[in-house]
Figure 1 (tube, one colour):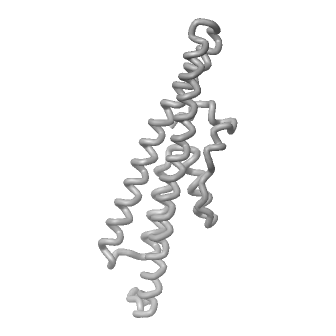
Figure 2 (cartoon, helix red, strand yellow):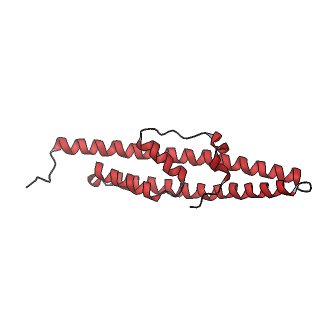
Length: 158
């Protein structure tokens, strides 16, 4: 029979581990928010470029107008994606706040379960990439240079 009661030193170590995990999850949330902001900047640049193209070619070149309109649709979709990601961020912080408000329920296992639950909620490729970086101990986000990446001109269904 195993003893389910933790010794004070074990309980203190578990609480410290749980708080460290909670801190890392908060850092993950901030990293996700920063990445969403950077991605939104990319979409806004696409929108600006599309409007400029429309203004220049509205009466001259129909293929350019068609491409500009397509770019506008992609840029507007970026706003929908941003809203979803911000909702995930809000949910993450609410869960962490709830966990921290009940210190007796705060364990490294409960934080690990929250970590897994967060990952399951992601709906975009970028969110999953940021989470993979977090798991590897890197909370870096990409810069607006990613706007030129191959996936920036495609619509990601989520």
